[in-house]
Image 1: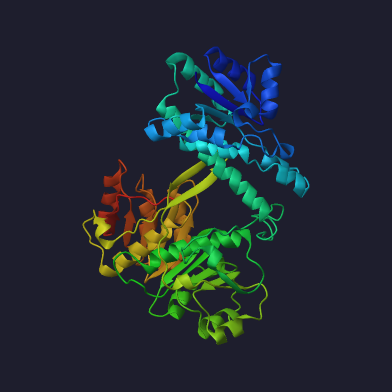
Image 2: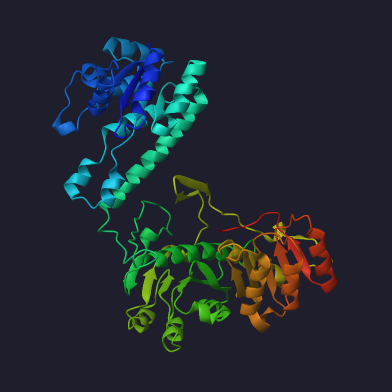
Length: 506
């Protein structure tokens, strides 16, 4: 006879689901309040205490954690040694775990006293759920009342829960456990890791550093001067470091050249490479001096006195200046301003592009994707026009492309002589982004190049760029009207390249 272990805080739908299991011949094992609810509904229940041989203790902190229950969940039914051990030890198999957790986050939102919050840290539930999720080859874990009907229907129609359903429910359980543990850790660190505020003053904010060997992990930064970093500062720093990592390894040319990136409101407004770090900084600043004011500046070389003087004597206000190091005289020259934050992050001297999985919580779910660590090489550019780009234009096309990679879509970047000179970001149509980029670039668009993070659906965007003087363009290609774009570029004598990949950033 199949056995289900039920231990839930949220009892929504519990009794109807248990009735369907009982009608199919399942034995119901339950703990505490769950058992009481089932008994009151007239269902036969085997109390957890009769399985574990131990009473509920310590005010309910100990109910389900036991060798008998966890063993019944975890042993491998296809392993002869496991099966023999289970029989010898009197461990009965548990075939389903129906479990949801104490409402920790809800209690935190209610600002309850710390002792009450601690009591809402569930231990037994997550332990059982994790064990069942691990052993999903044999055990069905049901972590959410919304899954009750689907599980019961599958049992009624097929006589068993499919392997695919067990796998999917196990994955959902691990996601829930991750979110649950994250909420607990955030609460425990709420005072140590608190920021001044979140994106806006009425929002609370925190930065929780994760253990990582990544030398560019923001938990490794050393705050030298100025007020504490804000939520937005961290976001802009992360974005600037990402773009700098691509510029430091720009395709297959000019590797490890001095570079500077300036970010304002999550979008780059300055990006440049130079023979010296002073040249890179100045070129990046001049890309858009208006937007750079109050921005976040990141360098891949130590800050020199010349850069410090350019900021102080030139009245150039920035919120954050991050670099692998600061010369002693540069740090001394910059210490007067309390609002300028100086950040030392040694890993910036050799920034590597991040890779792995990035996650974003949305309402009722978790979005995940691979990080966009695609390095575009000169060889990846396919020239589809009659005019071929020069070597200098190729270098600028790659720079513009990697700036787009770190800019909110839709994105257009105009570059010239190793520097960003105009960008358009975050508009719903690509033509408007072209106009914004051209407006920012002004006369500097003459002889420049441009990149687009997505294909041009019509030739109107390139026409805006070419009218401003742009002489080479790169875009992913792939529109059904690509030939129209090729034709207008050929008519204007402009080089056009495609990449066959796009670099949206939403």
